[in-house]
Length: 429
Image (cartoon, rainbow, N blue to C red; front, side, top):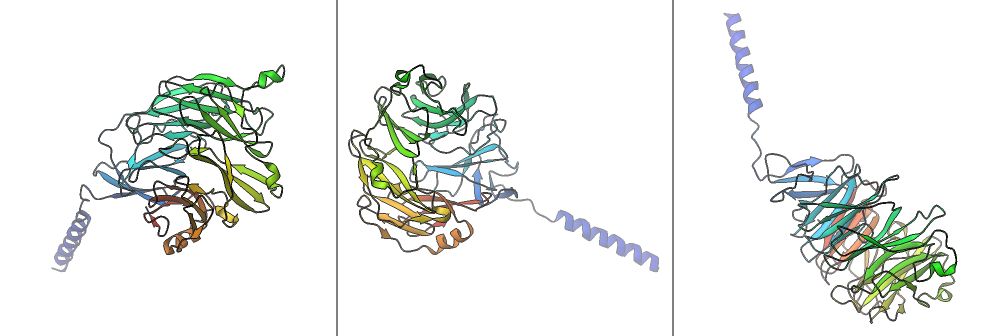
């Protein structure tokens, strides 16, 4: 009798265990699934699958839902409209590119093929450029003795096409005026003896490229270097106002310089007197950023530069109101920047309105930097900056909407934040 009872009890226990194993319900179809990358986490994105995916696309899409969540490290972003933006970063040499059209509530993975390896993180204006949510280019610099690869899409990343630039040391800047015409500037390795520059032009959306200017490594005489970009110096960025007129900023012999072209990049001349070193004799060194012309107005633009003293930097700028024909120096009455946010230049939305971030402190101007007001300090931004002290990038699309990217000192984690009241309050996207 006792053995029968023991047998029945064993059967009941086994049945209970089997029921428990099968009691875990399946997730609803639209329930987000978490896919974590424990190596490089930080930003949590809710991914929405695109309507159709090209065979070259690589995603971590679970098979049982249209939405899923990831944690990833972002290294750059770009706002395209008041609701649409791009964010990206390279993880294990694979570019992971995402687009949102609802202010960061959901994202679409529009990454190119994972078989194209990236040795560094693409930067907007340097080796990454998008005109709108559909049309964009990503450049993979040459690895070892290979060639630079230019990826392009005209349907929002559903399909990526590829072109190449052989024998290119490093792409320094890229700019597209429209969906057809664009330029690439390359330069040699500044750590070696060759810093030769070259300019490439495309008129077919990047399918083919023509070298239209090159600086000779060894010139037969001085005339061989006339009407060209300088052989020495590091290029900071490039911008064009129309099909003929463009500008390139260069840190040349340690000082900011500006070069311009009036024939689509074939010939270049230095803008003489643009930077007056005599006004900044107390600066130990300088930095210079890319020339920028404000959205919707190619007559108004500016070039930011930084004056470094010991471990602090102060950003100021040269502004133009006539498409670059003349430039005016504008000093900024903001504090000197130190620490992890020192590399972040002031940003301007238009000729009047701009912001300057100093850690969790946000300064705002509406009179071209003549006066700056310290905005009320955001408790959320102050909290986040304690854990993510590197203020990497800020961009405003209008007077109210802006994005901010912050990261940790080890560069393994980052967070993307948003303000919808002009920089007063911030939230993690």
